[in-house]
Length: 259
Image 1 (tube, rainbow, N blue to C red):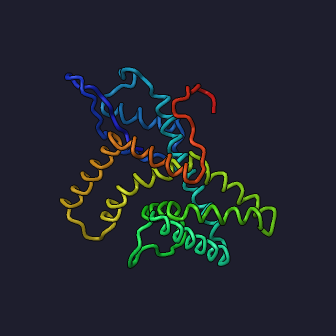
Image 2 (tube, one colour):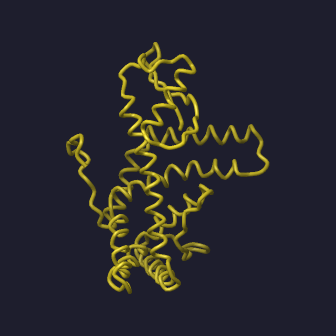
Image 3 (cartoon, one colour):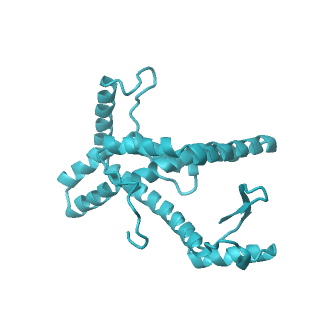
């Protein structure tokens, strides 16, 4: 668990600083609260002295975000597994991707040239390598249309009721705004952090070079947070429009407690 303190300076500037990293056995709100209070007490910082306390809600939100990310990658793996379950489906996936590429080239929406438009396949998320998470996300974004086609084929022509039902379930997930939004958000974030992960996995690494990569990654993430939201959301909406995915009304009033 990363603990970040937000505070206001005497000049009324809001600052955020990474305060500590703590190992936790699980991510439920009770555990996070216990560890957070322990760290603050160690530095003689009492929770009751925090102004504008939103501790409980913040802990619950943090716990939910961790679980949502875990759920997202579980869903991603399920989609990849179903679509790539057999050689037949794998061949169908590549055939669908080849047709999609040809259509995009005909519409001048895809570059041509040596090494371009190569037919690839979906990649599973590995257990230990974070780079595999990024590669899996990129492969699904690239083959989104082809993946949807194969799922529809399984729904219609699956050999068993269980196959058809499973394909229908993950198809609903694939075509949901929440999944598409998270897919693109993780692609943006991991596109930045992947460079850092690759560098830190090298056996020999100069500390100054590592510090430079860390600083660059922090800067790019902060720039995405401060000024990248509008462009990011516009790209997600364009993607949803292309694939006929319903986009929720962002201006609608949110009622707390309702799903």
